[in-house]
Image 1 (cartoon, rainbow over the protein chains, first blue to last red):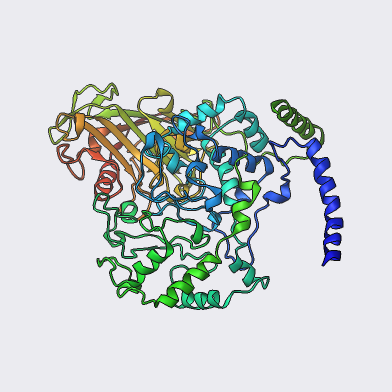
Image 2 (image 1 turned 90 degrees about the horizontal axis):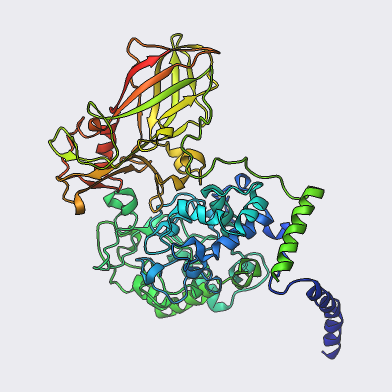
Length: 350
Length: 270
């Protein structure tokens, strides 16, 4: 045991020396150690073909860093107070920790829960109602939304063009210093699209690198028989829209997908959220009404689903779950937390 | 810290110059913000057709000064503050039956911006053109292809961000008949897919006229756009019941059916 410690210390020594030398030359406030390899898009083992085509927006180091700077820059809001990162916090898998609905400019509240951000390149429709059909167009939603960032797009482009730093950063990323909507959102897409979550314990088990506990295994079996038809592996979403029997909040009466399609058969349908990182993205549901996973279990199993014409047929009688199954499911869902992803410094505010 | 950063940026710029180690720019120089006429920066001298969009309300040349001076078929008086529309996917057919399609054919016509009112379709083969076809609005493909540039830059303000897609045509103004606050009139026809899609194909007739294109001739088509046509056929629009329409649905689809016949070719200068 002692010998092992000495070996470990010897092995660590060169690393420490390198770190020490490195610290002499690197500005500690700009841990700029990324290289092109770190910003390569990759498709995790077992994942389907992504929906977004990065061949049309090749990720570069400069493009990724520009996107990251934009993501964390409150300049994107009308009064320069709200950044994307304000509601999308890395430690909460880019959801808004402990916030039921999105908080925006002038202290205004939205009507829906800010979702976590990961594996976005596999999404084909964005927002709870799927109103945005393309990853590059997604940032325009919250930027323009009067209760989120409330920023006029043309004014924002002028503001960025007048900034002392941005023109050079756009030139580095795109060849010239012209700032357009397309360049801005392509840069943000390079950053957001690279947020890949594929190193949860679940993923490690799939790759043979870890094993589930007995309870997690039981939870997975229950999950596959009772939840997976909508929360389909490996993305843990079918990327479709369902009415999951939530009683509509009378002050909001959110029609969900129907607000986009104007089709009554879409009334109260919302996009199936991915369950990856679910244990750390409370509160839950499109309006953040449930604070715990147990409340979600009880919603589906409690026989008290809101009955309406568009209630998903799979839920018409609820999902019967025993107390043991609920607890097993929650144990399994805990294996979907990707600690590598939420601590990866390349996604952090610089 | 700042100095270090500046030095690093400078070093990176120098390095890119010296070694060319950075990837090539991934896209060409785009047009600037709010381009008025991105597809025709220069007036061509041949192998082209010009289209002059001449905006009217009935027989009156449209003024966008927001003064209530117009009347629709329903009898509502109204003003015009904004009148904008996309013209896309333009094609011309000649007297031999050959059809020529403009590449990257997206134009934003804004009644308030005179520079946007005349567009030139260039690089055309010589021929005697007898008809044309275009779309009012933006095709669904471009609505789902990510952020676009030029006339299609969302910063031009003809874009919905929450139910993503282009506003095909926009009328804003005021009417004493409107029940909306301040008598506002807002017609934003958008929605690119499904039963309420807002694009419409149109083919205003040349009549007996033709447009003769050769290496030294650029015919000019005088294209009338009559806002009152938007409000009267096939459905008569009543401003007391229809005044703020900016969510894709049956009303915007009806307005789209209505604007499909608002274009008329007044004449062609050869």
